[in-house]
Length: 123
Image (cartoon, rainbow, N blue to C red; front, side, top):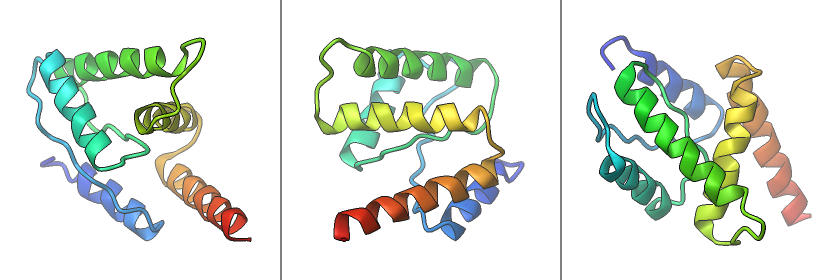
């Protein structure tokens, strides 16, 4: 956080009309309790996408556990249609785009898609 990456990412999201929420409650060696705490916060706040900033062993372990949970939740033969499954699908969608687009372009792309989806619902 000291490098300012989180602040710059938050500013980009705000500029795209997206209100970010933050979760920093993990340490260098995250365990399943910390992953569950992040999942619970995301579910309680109706988070539909996750962007991880940082690196190192702790974040890698946390992300690996989170990705396992997302894939297991989403790729079941008959996935549930609850909010958590929507969160998992949305997170995997953003991750797929993140791997192919620079962050600012991704934020703009997702904002435009969200606005178009809202316009389709209204019209």
